[in-house]
Length: 182
Image (tube, rainbow, N blue to C red; front, side, top):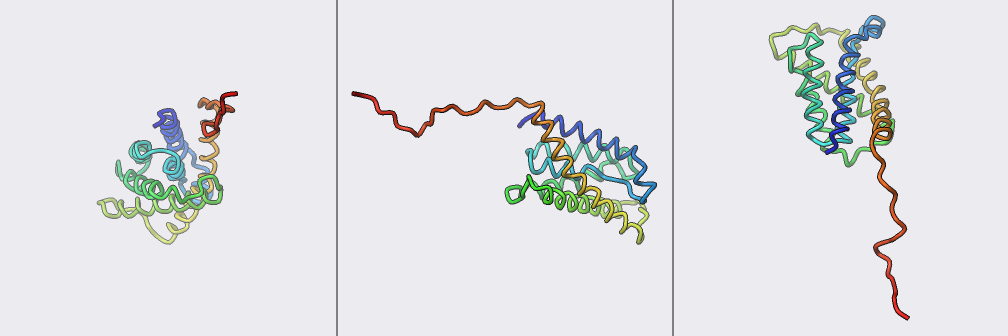
């Protein structure tokens, strides 16, 4: 496990939660609070291990809940379930295709927000749910899906810039036969 990637993902998640808690222009314009964590969870599920995925679900869920009206800790399980579902089938997913990243980000954002809503409904909290919630869910999912390819580009750029590059292979092939003698 590469601890640099784990730390970079957690720092980006912390900054994303801070940004989504303070960026109010989209909320004032279309009435939707953005959610950036499912896009990071898609990247983490496809490129990291289960420990990094769990750390992101726990830390990101607690950070997001501390800045929202949700009960503390309610976002952890939906983030983890979305990440685990993608992680289990990551061999079959086209990781480098922006369209696949968009579709996964849209599905992850829609699934995580729907699971969070179902969990909030099962508590004593009374969320405001109506026909406008369907509009918010659609816009939230599309914005989350649109941001997901940007997360892939950002983390690939960070990895390329700050990680060391392995040396190229030598000209010696281990399967060649060397004939010696006269």
